[in-house]
Image (tube, rainbow, N blue to C red; front, side, top):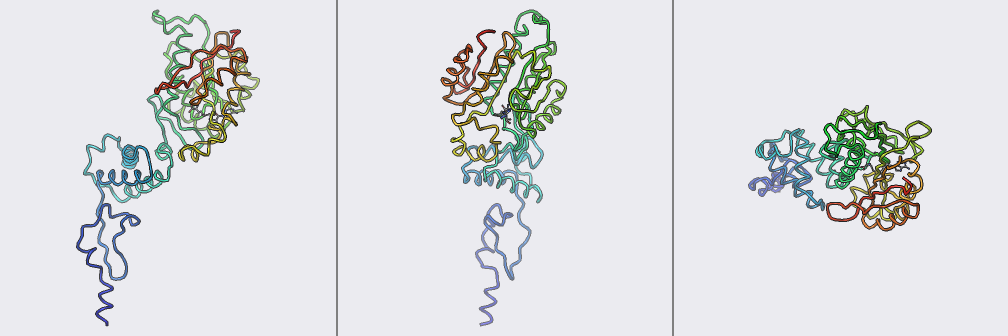
Length: 351
Ligand SMILES: C[S@@+](CC[C@H](N)C(=O)[O-])C[C@H]1O[C@@H](n2cnc3c(N)ncnc32)[C@H](O)[C@@H]1O
């Protein structure tokens, strides 16, 4: 029965004759045969188009909403090219290190790590911001809050008037506060979107020192570290007894945590497991920060100053009632791109 033993040691015929399934370089995924007596020749290198196909397959299987886009972003990142460049290089072959890196990122994405964490950055208002687990990934809807804030400051300065150059009727620098700055996306966008003739003193506070580190790096990345002062502390206490808060602000912009505590567990894994809970948890009904702002923000606003704040879907009526009960004038809420009320615009009645 020696011949029989030998037969067992030879590679099974089906592996020798059929084309190796694509991609063959990932042993866990259609492993090529191996074992005693089996000679593994060099595995086929993957092309860009094969990688994209593989990425789509894996990410679709993991229930990722935009498998193609995510696979392309990850692949472009591994190759150090722009995403659109992939389409010009569909037959380009990846080297082993690139394939291994792409594979590892694909699996992390399939395990629901946010794409932005894997890439290390997120887009906000047309700019790239560093993000990591210490900060909320800036959301597209928050860009509308940035836009409302920019518009308010320009109007207050008079930059929306026809006069050129615009005249600052206030005859002092404008002052803005970003409450709960996270990555710094709002404060930095305000600093960068102001026309050069407008002098705006921008302060940004957060309770998280790690978030503030990221925000500072983002301000350096965008060359506006002199334009934004970052302050650490619990709410308005971060302003301390410095002169910063004493005079008040023309604008307080806030995207505070507003998810009810009990709903956090049911969020998408990307959010629940990777955004900092400090950035999400708004207390039992999600409105803790709005209560705090309603009672403590009026003394922080200058006459004519405005509070603009993002809130969750369905929260407007409760927030408006609570602000009105603290003598605020509450405007019609601004809506997001889907038409849902998402942004509070309010001013203290006395101002
Ligand atoms: C929803 S995130 C918003 C981040 C960023 N502004 C944005 O829009 O992407 C809320 C931020 O508030 C901060 N925060 C939470 N509790 C705070 C507190 N008591 N005082 C100051 N900041 C706080 C969190 O650390 C987090 O960075």
